[in-house]
Length: 87
Image 1 (cartoon, rainbow, N blue to C red):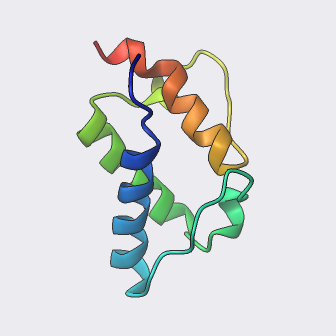
Image 2 (cartoon, rainbow, N blue to C red):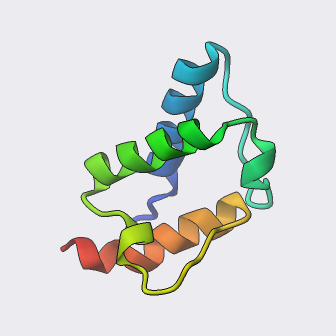
């Protein structure tokens, strides 16, 4: 069984949050609405770019559908769905 990407995604979020806000990142729950985290659009772009560098793929460019995860759980699931494309 493959390990979840969630810990890596959480860590990357915290790093980007702290570099953008110079404070502790909010605790992400599965139902946390991404737009309510306080990370702005540039911060999210940096977050997704950092994940692409670290994970080796970007599900937003791999997806043929325009999909925008609303919650943290949906965001993690979206990355999990496209993980196999990275191989």
